Length: 115
Length: 113
Image (cartoon, rainbow over all chains, first blue to last red; front, side, top):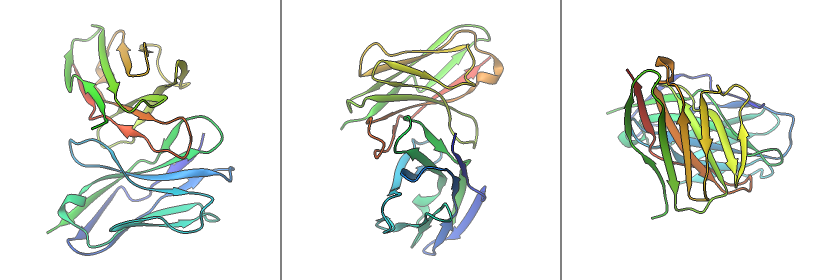
């Protein structure tokens, strides 16, 4: 099974500032997909952003962007202009392009946004 | 809106009393997943279906079973719930192709008394 590691159990950011959440993964595959999911307190998990491993260009979705370093097996999430609604648990996830339908999740980072 | 629906949102059961959680989807996705999530932890995959093909995770206890009678519905049966089975149970769906993300339901919070 693939391993996904999020080394920051908790992070905090001042409103309107920028924060970066870290994620690393271990795989021998060359083709895969990476995802960041957001789980607000008592609310359902939703996709924040997706990155295809074959693409060198980093994905961007409005205030959310990733820094994908394939050789380093690193996939960090940058949240710009942080808002109170960004407070949530963030999970990094890996899906193989070739083997099975499983998603492998990291242990999550709890983000607090300080007004 | 297309979505993943879980019922009930909150379920209380007694120790050892069988319980069934349900999930339905209007997305027409091939793959349906059941996860167990305990407080502030990552979701733990219990099993998933690709169409009617059932895929059990190696460390999923036999106490947990699943049924998928059709594309839209999937059930999680806990045959003899223990106190350690108290958790949030998440249902998710995905298209079969690997480039696609999962869509999650709101979860069912299971309490075992």
